[in-house]
Image (cartoon, rainbow, N blue to C red):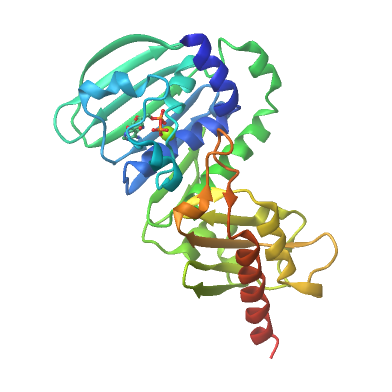
Length: 321
Ligand code: ADP
Ligand code: MG
């Protein structure tokens, strides 16, 4: 199983940022209200995620490290209406196959602590009873030198982690996030459900003063969010965030729809800053396209695209008066 887990780790755990993404998604799925992420040396020395969520029962902890063990899907048809961020049961076994992992968890009563090294179970013992889960990942990729070699510079890897944390924070304004790298706090959000506060924490209050709300609703779909006025642009599409039912997704046609909403108001090579929340019946979304679950298939994509473009166009029209 260690080999199989290392192979699936190749898909799920490409780099330190993927570990952060999987651990934070688990924290969110566990109904956490506060998630604190700490990294050292761009995650290669340490990735630590502390949450205050549901926790895992002591007798279930070792199961959580088994491949395809998930507590989130019980029937095949659940696959077609996924509401949680995770469902494949691959993250913990994959991460633990390429690192040293200590997981402490408690559901409120006596807690438990497990240690895995290079995919092998080492020990389990009693631990503190603070409700929630702490996962510490050390020496990432120590046993997969090819993967280590393929990583970019520490600064680039840290930027990728930061980007992931930012997008998770934008997707979940109701969760208070902090992100600390080598002792420096890089992000803190309030957890009060205020998307504009999260945007301010990430992009700065001055930037956010040039962003305006958009909203649109139809019987089976709804969008809301904030987009920048045409005077506030970036040189990359990367500042357009699409969040589908609480999951950050990459989708070219919908990104295009955001840009199209600006018509000729954008200069060539310039792109808006935008965060668009999309609420859609989970039955219309296939998230099981890729192991990282960032690519999705949406059956109402063209309709949704028009809705996004129109909402932006209308908002800009009112601002030009
Ligand atoms: P998945 O998220 O796809 O179910 P994972 O390997 O990420 O698979 O996690 C396996 C299981 O471990 C989850 O289904 C969940 O029951 C449990 N788990 C993992 N992380 C946490 C956490 N932070 N809080 C509570 N339960 C967790
Ligand atoms: Mg998971």
